[in-house]
Length: 193
Image 1 (cartoon, rainbow, N blue to C red):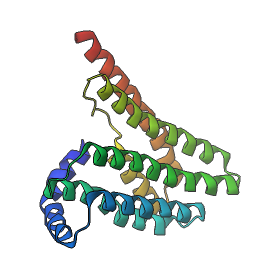
Image 2 (cartoon, rainbow, N blue to C red):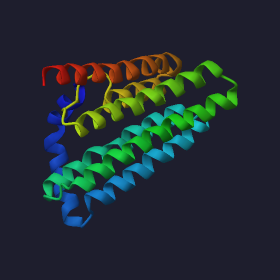
Image 3 (cartoon, rainbow, N blue to C red):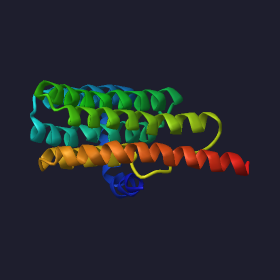
Image 4 (cartoon, one colour):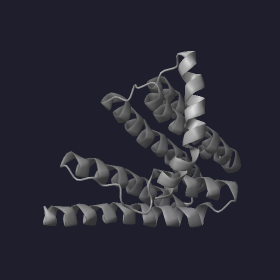
């Protein structure tokens, strides 16, 4: 997955910033909450049709997503609750972005785009749910084309280059395809167990 490659490439920078943050007394959970509030506020820009500005701010706020985990590892504060909080707030943050888009398209009377946003939201939730449910029954499930990183990358690209409708088609289809890939993966693992 692209996200794993990027994580490896940026590990040194993240660790350096984490070292500075550790001296400030900021906790990983505080970073998680601040990152959530920042990226959720981008939904307001999307609801107002300020797409390019939103794309730039998503990039900036996404840095918090890497930093909270980096800080947790650096300070030896990796906890089950921290992972749970991060994952849960990531879902809410992504929903806030899609919610802003949904509001914009509903105000414009753009029914097709509104339905594409809805399909993308469902796919996004199902990608996360299938992984969580699989891991709940003891099956590792990180497979699939469109993890959160890929979904956010497509959205940012579309916002910056005014390609939102085609991107929504891609997000609506491939988010749901990823959930189906995960279902198939769990099925195959269950058959071999």
